Image (cartoon, rainbow, N blue to C red):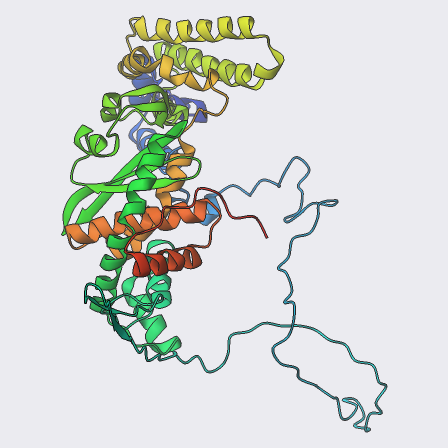
Length: 483
């Protein structure tokens, strides 16, 4: 219609859309959007939806596998100057040691020139090399053990000879038993994969049920070592603790992991609370317990506790993803991050600072966290995390007092990760006895590996001693020498 005044269409730019996506839009922004025509509103709302979907799929806590490959950033170069993989120039090389001597010798003589077909003349030159391989005919060795019997002339008691490399009433040797257990409880192979490997590749016929029963017997013999690992863990200077879900007979259980520098103890229990912790902490722990903020750890009687900073920082990043720009939350985040950076800087400078000024600086940091925890925050997430600081503020800075205590529970998460991989492959356990066997054998195998010992040879020696004496020898404490 002539003379009518056209309504001005509002200009919608990226900054305007960002304010809606980050939760910073004002009432004026909303009225500005509503004052436009239907087409402008439609495309603006679609742009906001698309931007929010992209942010949700690309947050700081989003697993790498959930992102499309084309949306992942290019990998950063290794090191400051993009160093190549492997040992750097000037470092000694690392390669497998060649065999000392050969079991057989083969001669390979070329007969004719591959280019023209002329017969070659012998030059007398020979180049030698040593290679190792698995024999073509892998055939199990069947042994007939003749167990001679004797009688004591004094008490007239009869005794029978014992084979050191096989358990009583067992048709499979100890090496097969220990190797199969290592493949399952250390390497994470499934029961079907193990039986298939023995039946078709090693030509040793095994059944799944028979193998499981043998593992139960092995766990009974090594149970004394399982208890020894528990005692040695309680004597450690520091201990990392973590837990994850587990299934036993289709019911939810929990796998607890307690890791020291030279031992790993696994416990599968129905409880995720203090009852399970009391089964492990049978006495006061005179070291430092490193864990996350799961409240049952508060019931542990110990000298000190160190709470995991990365767990707290991940919570902060998750909240910051949604509420960045809100003044109360931004203030809390900035102060907390500044305290964390100051703590890490102080820890790095500890060797250069005298004892009294260092102690004073640590006390000031504890006061800063306590002050944040005592303040009244309007933002709900700031208030929630402030309560955590009020409760665990000093336990976040324990690593500043002890040289060998880390600020994170990374060691505990690394120790429990192999068990998580086994859970993924083997679907946990079908009975309480199976859960106990799982706990015992995972603990023994991984502790031996952690101490640099060969699990197969070491357990074979223990089984031989147990067969002859009825006593399981204690777990070696000293790591095997390298090489």
